[in-house]
Length: 223
Image (cartoon, rainbow, N blue to C red; front, side):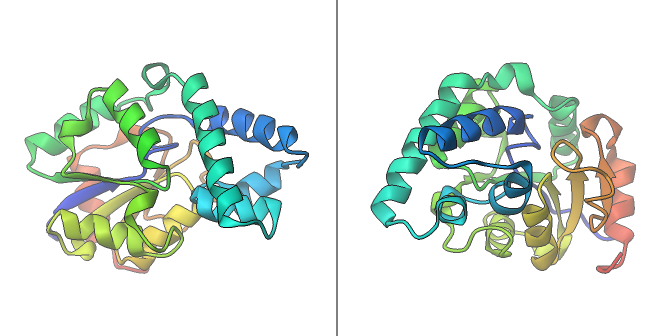
């Protein structure tokens, strides 16, 4: 059996079901700045991407100063509106306990800003359970580039091939696969069919156990 060294978590849509709030805030923010945001744009240009990426994807060729100002404004709106404790993905705490009991390291690698990660994880009182929390500020290349998950494996002291990535976005799934890790999809943002490239797709953490993780590690890289 291949050894499971670490599980690397995305945050939005994985640890917390935050994308519905993000969707509302994104639309409010874009409307405030005279820009329509469609569901297709959300899926293709926004979800799983950093502010540095999605803002020019939606608003076009804007300056770095505008990107920074827009990002700060939008994320402040999100933190004001979002309650992490009311939106934990079912089974999360039990799954973290399972990994602890089996000495499997845990890392967060999110496209969200550091302020969001600190807010959400501290509100859930789980920050100390992770070896490291990587945010958008910690990488040069955002998802779907493999850097976030390669760096996540590195800070855990693990070979990416011995890591399991848990993701909800298509760009995040691509990032995890490109890093050479096994990928579990959480179907909070996309359907099971849309996440068919994952090694396993689940609705939440309640159906995951050590046996299911071990079975994933036995799969070939191309499934």
